[in-house]
Image 1 (tube, rainbow, N blue to C red):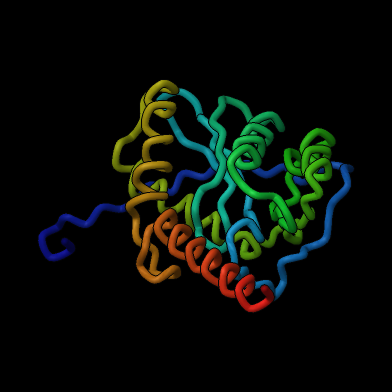
Image 2 (cartoon, one colour):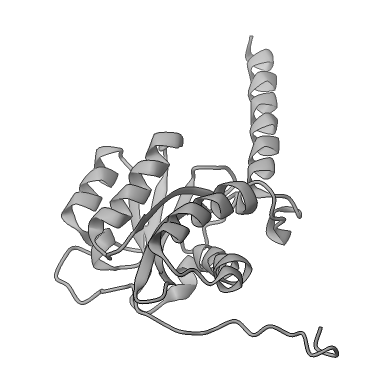
Length: 212
């Protein structure tokens, strides 16, 4: 592509989505040296922006740290805590929250009373990155880069309605079900989860047989 002058350079416009200048409670990082070995052991949460003609649309997303699958998301026109809560409720409604760690930055959305109340209500352990340390949440940052390079920059949204129509399709049909990930054996996240869930069921049946 470079030889034919076809190289496409992604735009690098930047907008801050994290406001950590607040007096709300911050939580320690529980993910240091943690390598997840099953689904719903560790969730990563974050917010990014999508530029449209005259403003921005914001996407709050949660991915599974083991499978890289997007398990919950919310779209909105503001950076209120309700946006992050929508993604959290979406994830909780579809997944298992037993012995789960929720990891995010120290942004005001994730430290808000209502957000923390939901996490504690489901006995989900709360973990947060150190201030100005995005590497602790690199997995979801990788998802955001993929979303922007492979979808947003290619399509160049103009309206809020276009975002609402295309982003769910990309997340659910393309990213979760079709896009291959080198970190999980060049499989899509949903296929990777299905294979590992079958293995876990097989192991459980084997253990049951040994104890019966």
